Amino acid sequence: MEYQELLDEIKNAMKAKDKNRLSILRMVHGELKNIEVNERREIETSDVDAMLKRTIKQTKETLDGSIKAGNDQERTDRLTEQVAILEGYLPKQLAGDELLALIDTVVAEIGATTKKDMGRVMGELTKRTGGNFDKAFAAQEVGKRLA
Image 1 (spheres, rainbow, N blue to C red):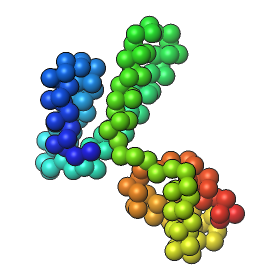
Image 2: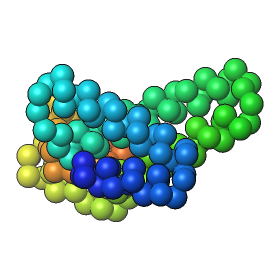
Image 3: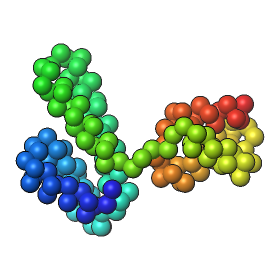
């Protein structure tokens, strides 16, 4: 997601009076502003995507803690909705047959034959997809091919 798109989404959430969406988007925007100020650089698309992923992870951890603690259903529902909102802004993840085909291509191009080559294959997959793939599934499939 582009940084300007995030700003536009914040405006749209304000106009729609969508408090939950506005709250979570403002939190992401605030973290990005911290990066911009502290590192004195422009925010890039990769920064926005990384912040979205980090916020999703943190929100899921909070949700798990909330469920374990037996907190009220309203809070749990709000956190679940926030995760869904954030995931909607992430680029589509490569999965299934597309990912399998890419794994086969990368293994062949690199000439990977042993498990020692797994890191190189996973690194190349990350580079080609921008990290937008199911890493656990990919690692399992790469392991099968390099057995």
